[in-house]
Image 1 (cartoon, rainbow, N blue to C red):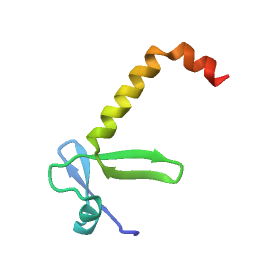
Image 2: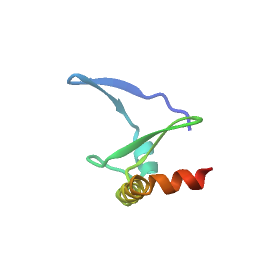
Image 3: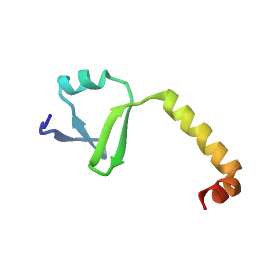
Amino acid sequence: MNKPLKLIKIGNSTGVILPKEVLARLRVALGDELSLSDTPGGVELRANDSDFDTQMAAAQAVMDRRRRALRELAK
């Protein structure tokens, strides 16, 4: 899908208008949160997954606690 998107001014920020088809494909509605990620092919927009955020926070805590062990394993 290749659709041109319009940027609009929202206060001191800039917003983007997403067509209904894109919102349906993302399975999001007004008020939902989206995640934007950098990928090798550009940027990726997806519905925010709170379970993923929780899992990543737990993984970061383990990496912080076990930094020395992870460095040894990486050798």
